[in-house]
Length: 212
Image (cartoon, rainbow, N blue to C red):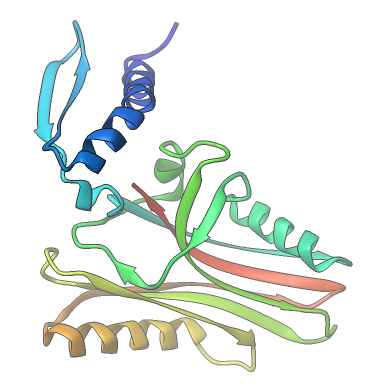
């Protein structure tokens, strides 16, 4: 028997599937659109005006990293994505803006809203090497403003690891971009980093994964 959250998720998924073609037609005609998210007998009807400019502004983001080694470069990348837990999606990399009012969530929460085969946007740092004995790294730095109505910044760094706190460097770069863009104080910085010893062909990835 389905639980209430499962019913709500199934209802919303079906609604979006059926309405996507209609929405595209209305958007192409330049008509105003009102959407309804309803679950009869559970929470009634909730209506809101849909702003098409916000359709691709992420609501949530989670961070992950992974590493993989194999004799084949492509397979090592796949194994790194598996280690990071995001191999089941069609990943599209984007540039490095942290959306306004975007909620940072744990990976488990973000994954519950994604489906296998879905096109998923992410900011990714990636490094691959077959020079055994080397260390390689990937890192994503993040700076979020105190004023959540403003956007923040994400930075990606990757390469041969020669020591030091590469995550901190990524954070400082993101903080600099934020404060010079708006002249505001940074509310929070953090980073996620993966460092690995190269064996065979090794790939490391770090990613900020967006949930629309």
